[in-house]
Image 1 (spheres, rainbow, N blue to C red):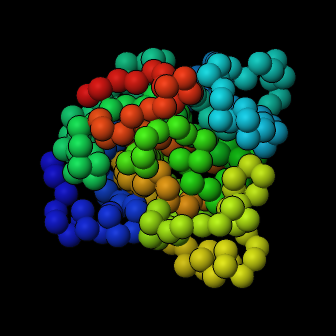
Image 2: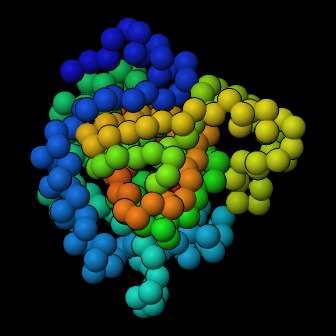
Length: 258
């Protein structure tokens, strides 16, 4: 399967593209069944809501051991990390042959899985999952350039009530000043420049099987989950083969060439 010329141009222009009904529902259900078991038993490595909000920029930049290191069972899981090696169901989706020609198109290169980043089941638990602030994924990663793309699989309905992705189109090509970001490199939601840009945001609506491709420098966010149902998604990241990780950094680990 390949993108049309128009679809590829749309991705390059806006920095994201939605592939409607891309994954089979049976495949989504199989992924979801395994994910729910790992969530139920808090199988490490995980990131909790508390950890997400408390961890420093230095931690996020350099961490290699993704375990939560907290025995408090009351903590709310925000994501299951390092899912590639957890189960063959997860591995098979990340090595999906159908999507590979598309990834080669958007990267204009051969595809390498960067399993040090993302490689996660993302959760926003019912009435507990908090917002994800505006950010660029690339901010904590160390590569020779920005030719990285994330693949987001919706395992159920995603909307404004349960925390669907929002994007600022074309922001992957913009240059920003340091003072437009806070101490953790989140894009501030105040200031005239930032507010004017945020007002151009696009809110997506996704159903089971929809896939979103988005560039590593694209600004994106999501609301918290105020619904009565958990929202669970799958995200992983790929790079072009010629986009190399910086030696000795977190990015220079756990890579798989497809």
